[in-house]
Amino acid sequence: MSDTASDDRIVRQEHVTGGAPYYKKDFWSKENLKYLPAHYRMRKAARLINRLAGGRECTLLDVGCGPATLGTLLTPRIAYFGIDIAIRDPAPNLREVDFLETPIGFADRQFDFVVAQGVFEYVGEHQERKFAEVAELLADGGLFIASYVNFDHRARDIYWPYSNVQSLNDFRTSLATHFSVRKCVPTSHNWGHSEPRRKLISVPNMYLNVNLPIISRILAVEYFFICSRRT
Image (tube, rainbow, N blue to C red; front, side, top):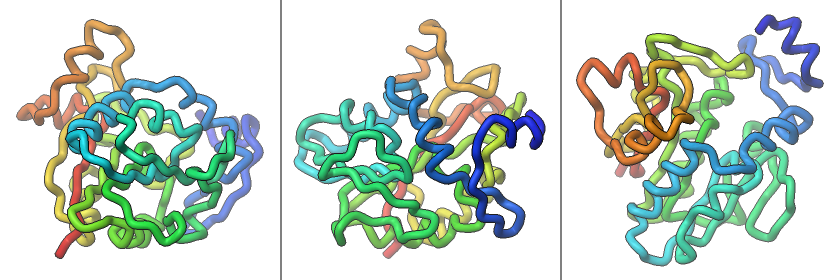
């Protein structure tokens, strides 16, 4: 899609720093509607979080929570909180805030899990600062789970609003300045650069949590990075 077409489709409020456009509430209030039903990556993230929680009582902050659909997929013992620039249905556990302009946080709480799905592709030059803010939010033993697109995919497709396109190695190097990366696993493998929709492909991928030599580098759609705070 051309830049002209992009401008025609949305009302864009830009902050241009280093040439990167940052989309604001008018854009995200519409974009977030795509995430009302639980899509593949969200369902796999919930499965991963529930397993890591192990049935214990814990707290979770969903950064860029959209319509807070993730909270409906978690076990009841996980207390869910979310922040987003465009909150559709206000609630005490949700906070509407532009976290590119305001530090990430929720009422001075610390969390057992901080999750950011499909967030860091949009943060441009703010990435390092946002990593540092997340690190401060983790309780002792807490985990940060972030997704990031594999821009080395064989059929690379870059969504036009992205402001932060980098290789997985560069993203991981940046993460490692603030976190210990415990595990990095593909969200899925697919010939096309999109999460699988056909059951024949999506079901096996839902349970596959390993890197496949050579194959993952060119067919992994996105990755989950599971991190703890550096000590």
